[in-house]
Length: 624
Picture 1 (tube, rainbow, N blue to C red):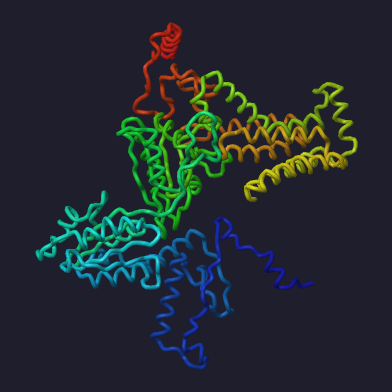
Picture 2: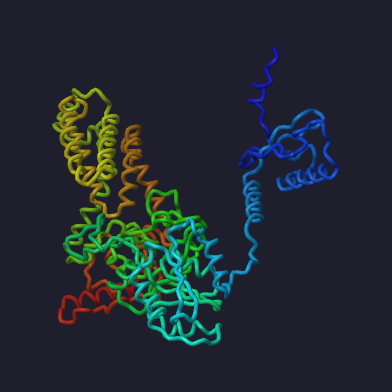
């Protein structure tokens, strides 16, 4: 029996293509405007045939073709045996070919970017750059400097610039409050910048790139006829949310302000908490289509220089069209994007950023994002709350112990319940086991299905509470947690003990301060739950060992995630528990700061207990 050709094609494999990832090219068979296509009987000319053969040869050469038999051919080419199939192209070659085509279509870099001296030419260039007059946001205001002396114009974006500042600090001084004389046109900018513009921030630019950067940032650019320079005047004034209470990191005792969507307001909040002349703010730009300001903040003379250089290197290596938020920047710069555990600390509290800067960390603020990033970060920092620093050490230690217990229970409690019920019932008292069996007598599902359904319901209620309006959120929580849960128990779909287990697990997950770590725990809970359903405590123990090994090898900007516990490095007693403030005189050693000591060993000289504790700590450090 002869096998049809289309079935043979399904099982035919080209062995030479299996070693690399590839894509299929989608090329045009023939030019639709080719006159030879309209009249098939017309023979193409010799020049056209040579040009077509040359183009085909270039395409084959770009794809690594070598011969007529072995090289990839264009779609539509024929040989003596008929039309040839399209050969796949390696994805590396395909990307390189697309990059070469993009480079050929770009504007040549040798074009003059300097500003023209004639105001008419400036207007034509502005119209081309900002797509005027179709673009109604860009305002071009023509006026005369010095009561009819020098023609000029001002450019700004409506909605991003403060019109009151433009009227009172730019147009009014230049138009009505100035007396200028006819002099050398090349020196007209000197009296304007030195005596006529009262703005607190002005900058002279000589290229169109500087002009565009100033206009899109909310500043006002002033051009004067006869000058090859322009003045960028600070006039930012768009609407933004004022400083308000933090939403995700609320505290009882401590500062109650949070970052906003204003870039300069955020940097000002950090400086308000950390008033140091050594606090440096470097601003980088990310994005090709839309520029986003990224501020890198650190303390000069304290922060590790290699850490600062590595942070700037990763940010400058980002090549995207637009970077809207710090969450996307975190995904670009973190060490291991595939890990569930976050390697960058995201916070909305400026006091926490100021404290981490004083320890030797680097802070990153992105554009209009209300969250700041701090690097590097260790696991213990994500379990700590900003409120711990403002409480006495017994209270802070108690809060941390509660959070560590909640962290373990958040992803182990449902798995332990399934493992004990299915495999290890001898580990619990007989009376309790009989009570569990009696409560599950009417339940028609297996334990694992029962737990998964309840966990899915809790996650659904949590996600719905975030997405719905604030006025309805508490109502959804009450309806989902009380009414639906009680109805499910009375209907015999779930056991009452499981409702308690799931509710305690949800409360424990809410006790984790870091939002990213809380998400990781919620995902790990399902992994432990499924494995415990198959192998019981053995699977839980194996997964715990794998998780700890994974955490031990993970790094955040070169710092092990479990420092200073693994590897063991000298550090203050601010890891598992909250240490006494007067005894924590050393900065974290894993940061390799330029100044290791942050306070004197004895900060309470009137207390004999403090002096003894300081001597004891000093003796321990010397012995290590």
